[in-house]
Length: 431
Image 1 (cartoon, rainbow, N blue to C red):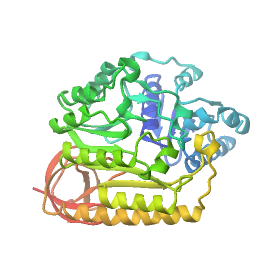
Image 2 (cartoon, helix red, strand yellow; image 1 turned 180 degrees about the horizontal axis):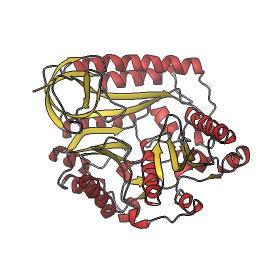
Image 3 (tube, one colour; image 1 turned 180 degrees about the vertical axis):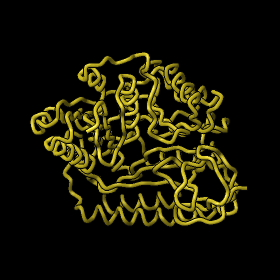
Image 4 (cartoon, one colour; image 1 turned 60 degrees about the horizontal axis):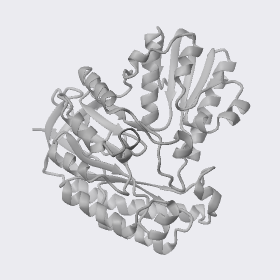
């Protein structure tokens, strides 16, 4: 056991990761040595930043807590703390059932952990983080919470109402990160198109992104987690006019059949969704759309599922993920709808949907062969440098593999010729 060492384990989404990075910076300022996602934690203190979104994520978080609790019982760990979404959502239950944990914190009071260690939180470091990503890119969280109340989603239960960060504070953080070598920003929020409504009484996402784009040293800005209803049209212009705003939008559409959209409380229709996709293609030529879809929501008929298949074939999303509905405690769907579609049917529909998307992805990737593309290099693995284009977000999207013949620098951009494609990844050489 290494004294004055804290191991932080982050589970869940990139928004949790940002919280862990802020905590790490505070702990380091207090004199601790901090490790992140160590394969075998050896510090005297461990902090688990949990996810509570869906059942599988909850189970992963609980298993990690139990594993560390066992290490504590064996004398290999002195203190165990838990923070994040799971403890925010199930604080009382976890506190009663896991006495091995020294203290639970929610999603927004992790600063108190510093006090409980006998140290003082340093507000002057509020924008500073210990990046756990490669040093050339960072996640940038612009808000917390969500005012949307989709019937199936537990996020508003966990995070509460939408809370935007002040624009100047965000821009200050961007400037600081640029000074530290960050070139690429993944802008994240539960619902980024709602940014600014609480602080400024109007949507300010386009203004924020444009101000970011004007900061020297910002090479790529990529947008994640937009909501389709009442999409802010001024964002189209910003994406079109600024070369460093990636032609990429992560927008979860969830479904296309009107009865399902209504049951989901999505506040958008099939006709409006088709029109929105067309508008994206028209306003931002070459844009890559990433979406997430759900199968098996209560009330999804065979006809509704066929509508979804037809929609995916028509839209030809460059990036698409999908998952099967699972009932989440406390949500409108869980309280008001019977989970009447069998797990077997859900999985069959999910497989069919992803098979359609795999063919689409292969066709889209194949069309890139022979094109020149700008690629940022993330790392080297074996005989290849691994990079991404502006159309690829870290960890979730395809990558570009470049044979490691020439010496390339991690975090630098190169113009590449695409030589080959498989269903997802590209192979290229530097021009």
